[in-house]
Image (cartoon, rainbow, N blue to C red):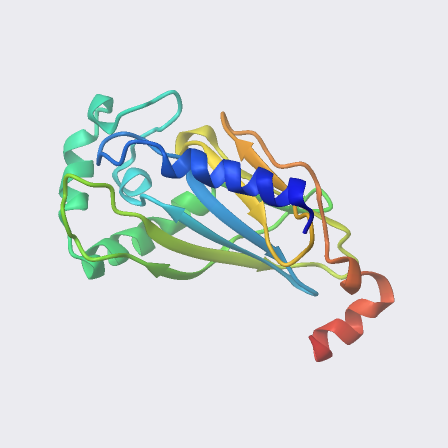
Length: 196
């Protein structure tokens, strides 16, 4: 990766880490996207209490200003096991808010895993890891990703390639088309599936 690429990624991450770490102040989610021979995988660091409680993060800077702030606080006090169960129950609705496309055709995000930290101090945000993905149709040349504004701002980082795509997405914006792995396109995809 070039120096410019490393600097751009470092600045985006630094922008998130420098934000105040208060439980109700909204911070952007951070998503790592990886395109392989036949799948696209996304790992997102986010506060899952917001989508589970129904808080609309569009234009919001503090969850205390949301009508569902009490529900958010109740979820923040749940154990990691309880919070995971609540998120899994809400996933079908959240998946509908996610845009994952292969060459412009919509893919259905499939939940892979959810990792929720212990309750800890409820006055601080709890950042969970949500992993989801989809199978790519044969011959896919590019992938697009984003989500609706109600899920909040998103820092997107492409993984597994040199000078991968990086962007700050807000207001429901989608990423630019992200090329599928250069080593796994065309006829060579067949070999990638068996020898990656």
